[in-house]
Image 1 (cartoon, rainbow, N blue to C red):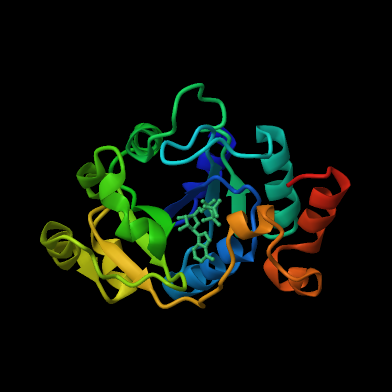
Image 2: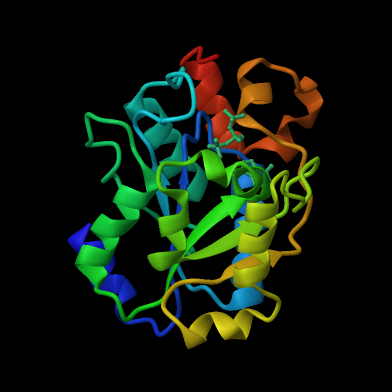
Length: 222
Ligand code: ATP
């Protein structure tokens, strides 16, 4: 962790985190983020696998297995590194608390971006203390098929209007507080469908890295 932070402070760009259950990690996580990184000039993204996600049932794969799959997926890819800080927690991972603990380590001057998919954006009002999130970081949103930016409540529509920016260079004007929705590729991939073995066997090469698929098969996961 300390090592990662030292590495990051050499960069002048945004300190970017991407949280998820990664049960398992797939190309729907990796490809949109690589595109986002190119669009906004991110040099580094820290993957933040969570332990007990607040909104969902317990992951099927163990912590070690999810971590192993992430390591296999990002091997030789210098864009990504992993933080195990959430995995060490015994209590639910609330994003707002995780972000505050990152802020305590990197200070409040540096741009901090939390990356989410569009499905997470439209349900963000269900997150613990969701309104505080933009007081801590920017939200960097990747497109996901089947989800628009339409919010069901006026309060949320107004929240988006107040914070959304369209030019990524504006992100650098403030350390937190903006929402940037990137026009990334729409990949119809989800961990749920992988766990339920919903994809045609021939298509797996488009769904997740081959090493991750081998690991799943070898360990009889899902
Ligand atoms: P599950 O199907 O188990 O809910 P998932 O595929 O949605 O899992 P998560 O690990 O829960 O994956 O997601 C972590 C983050 O990645 C979330 O912010 C989610 O919105 C985003 N994400 C997941 N899949 C995609 C995708 N295909 N395109 C864009 N964003 C995605």
